[in-house]
Length: 477
View 1: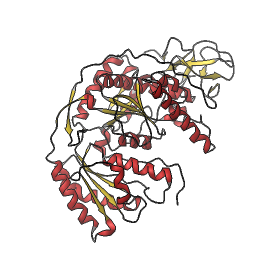
View 2: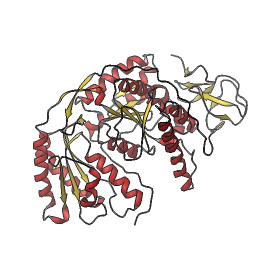
View 3: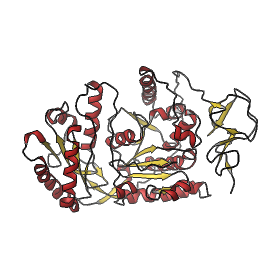
């Protein structure tokens, strides 16, 4: 097997797919002499510049490579025409809800309005599971620390995300659990839901009853009984929404797992489905590629606003805009933010960007949607879930057990991780490094996605990894 891989003919570096005495696994090697100040090119684009002269065959990393990024950038719209054609939608077995939405799970969710009732929600889940779990796909509580002592945008973030979870079609029924005296009390929160089915969404204020556990179990019994009458039926992939995430990445994430997800994005959007790409700070340095794929000039300006808005978020907190990548990323061979971002956006394939969503917005357009939000794994996964993603394709090079409320398909960038963590990983994209065609891997992964949409459980579901986290930017009272 060859020891290095060159991603683009324009690259002046290659990546070690087998450790050598001088180049660690996943790290870069110079393919030619590179003078101090010259650009280092990977994925066909500059990922920074050499800080000193580099000889051919020399190890390239943070000791001799520095980002080219600094400050705010001026952007120009240069439309790239999408060459992908529409394809007939394939089908999966989903749940068609009364409001016209489609779910791929038939669960009961318990959503606290405030962190004060987190433990109550967990106790309700613990007792309700054995009693009513057989009537649905499971009963799950989603505790979080917010809902009170918040002001302005923070309280709005909490309310929008919780409303997105309540309205998610993977939940056949929802118990909204309140305390009673919180800022985000049920009367304040209810308008954020918009129109909802009163048979599907129930409310309980725990301060108003003697035994909140008993009252909650009565409600969940009703919800579960109704859920048991829901049946799967054939639904087209034009109704499917996938979320795209990478976490604990390594240098192969942008070579195997992320481009593989890009193939899935292209396929799903060609079939008139939807994909959601978030992690705005991990677009810095590669954002113009996405901007050039904006479906129109208005969408282009919305991308510019999203990128510059997140840069302003950093500067208003006196933080360095281009601090990424993380220590784990660097250990895996990623040296600069451009390198990380160019690898990250591979998940978006070549699809046109049809919409830009603010934090907490719901996906309603077909095609590739960009969702405003940070790169933090739990916050990103919750954000995409609240936006309506039926499942999340989560690529990883170093491994993480994290799971969202929706099925979270873990895709390893290398075979070593897949072999080491079989309880975490659903699909091994490392096969691409071993000679399997990416198109063949895409066919396998797409079949797996259809099976998950039709009821097959992912590893996070099998092992109970389900968490949420909400973005916070302001003060706490």
